[in-house]
Image 1 (tube, one colour):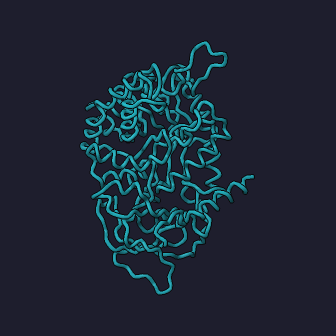
Image 2 (spheres, one colour):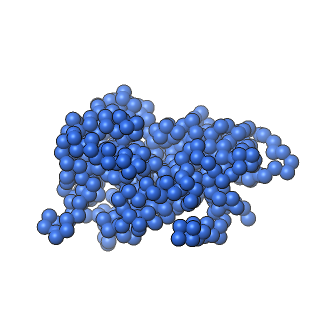
Image 3 (cartoon, one colour):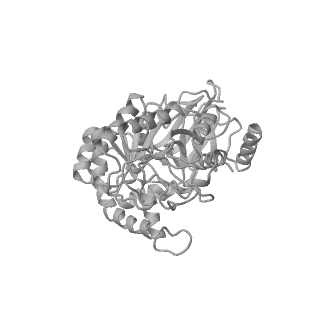
Length: 444
């Protein structure tokens, strides 16, 4: 059955011109690829974005040996008879990162109703769709369907399925009634629906960390404040005590893993920074004291601008997509402070990664670029957030995040110049992961 599904996926992609003749390389950095180590190809880029030096290099020739870039030369020559990918009319970039994914969400079924098998199918489809837009590395920050995405990740790593490399924080761990609970279901239901709840106390926190790691978590994610798209919780209120926050970070780091936190309010951001969290998500209402402490303690911010804008837009409409009245009231509170908070963090040099929180489907991922720029982020910095910054957050900057000799050959190309029109990032034309071509719309 698995081989039949794999063949169906591959045939469908080849029919669309999206899959190379060789099987797609997949897996965490360092895993074996289907490409032979001595396979040599060249890519000729009209322009190449260098997110480290924050500059554009013109007329670049890239030599790719096996799964890695081996030479990157401006004005370089291609040997006669060599295998060449013509990207001379495009802007090339490193493979993109999406660090706040929910691959189970695509509006076709309520997440509370997902079986693990159904979730895995949706997650695989969504992961493949995200890679079509150039996102070759994804960090999932909470899924549904139990631990299904762990299996999806493992199967991609093993080369059984085409897909991006995936790092998994399996669940949105929350206190009772928090952002990860199902607070819109009645208390007297015959079969109560509950989220991934952690009972009060540091022992319960540590036990939940151990459970996540037992089943294969790469990261742990908690809801350290209330949220917007949930009922009865307050985004300005911290969800855990400082002692519990300390226990979260201590236990995760003891297992040599990383931890991130859903945070809107300032108090929760301060608590996460004090506890030593690796990153916070959203950070829509952080103020001077939280920003200062986050910078001091090296806590990354992963803002998610597009999703908040979209919720606010939907609140002005009528129909089945309109959020609840309380959701709409909460988004007003968040939006009122979001832009000022993000620009303060950005201008003061906070480390910022790229995350989308595409709760209506991963096809919205590329829209985050324009959303960031609309707030005041420079286009080059938005591109750096989705490449070298995110690679550094994930401890992958020696392998990914820029097009340099020795790094894994993840390459994306767009027509036009994203520095003058960031929306071209919504029309990716070419995607390579570890030397294997996944998409090439430029071949006629």
